Image 1: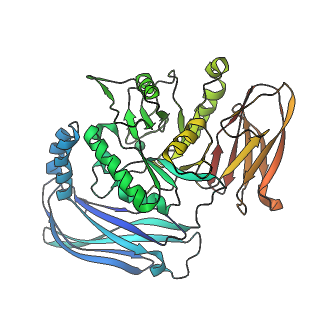
Image 2 (image 1 turned 60 degrees about the vertical axis):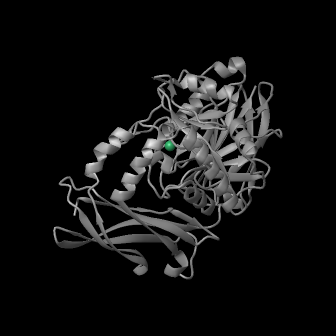
Image 3 (image 1 turned 90 degrees about the horizontal axis):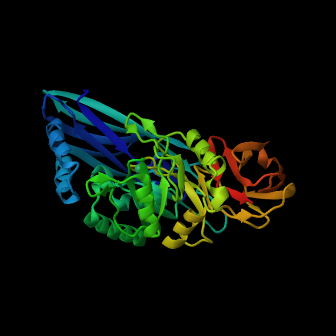
Length: 463
Ligand SMILES: [Zn+2]
């Protein structure tokens, strides 16, 4: 039955000590002939075991009818969008199930992969049909961190971005907590927010923070003429509009500097079926950095641009101040996606909002989808500057997590890989001293690989 859309929303990573998580199955009737469907029953399975079911017995009207209405509402302020929410609530039928992986496999081990299957029985034109969709969930060990480091996701959306009713701040914060994170920044799109919705969302962040013992910061993703910008620490709602014209990238950056916020270019090379989200105004200055890892696109070009900014662009050599911090975020608009890409920051263990923002601002951060590596040069940390004389021989003091299997370590200097070490953990250690001779000013950063997982440190700069 092609007129029915079923989605299954669940985290794709569950980490020890958590074994339970929530799944939301939603059904929408996309029939263009505007015919109702009848949903009879819904069930959720894994490994041949039924984990939950519900007899629904609900008639679901076609969503097609309301799409025209939704289109007229999408540009309206938030309070009018409540109508849109109500409409979606009526034409999308969603059910949540609490699932425990131990019920599927009592002796869980790390790396176990589960295929969740949702089955839905529907009746249309008197004919009954059973449909299913599936999603994979992997069970991992707890997220490991070096002392003083905290992990988090600086790019997470909620219902304020898509108006999907179940995707609340609370659920996203809980999913982040279960992914092993210490902090999360909620970054909904500016067009579906307004000052009132923003204030309300801030209260929801505070409530979630208390409830789950995870720092929940409120940021935003603002669409300028240059592209999408992630905004943190502004302390108020920021709109893309200046009167009736859309702000340019530079206008937004200047506004942010005024309110002591920080901003990052989001997914600067994303171009897919959902649209062209590439950053278009590379001449702008004064922003904090860019998203080098994004859960919804590949990142090779973003890495190249990052190196290009730090090396080919000459501004920093003149001012000495231009640094571009690289971060990683999931950009999850649902429960799935959370945990795919994230950022480690060094805050000396603090989870205060200001220490997290400061670490992101200073570049004491590592973008990752699993491993963590850190390095120092002459006692200076990531994001800092070391003064050297030409031809000086230095040591990169690299360290990583005890017991972490690193397959490769790559030293990148001024945008070029100058050294690659394979099978780095053969000597069963968690640190290494790498000698390097510095001829020119510039920067060094390190990339680490563990299977298909990567970590990109921010650079240390040399003058
Ligand atoms: Zn986003």
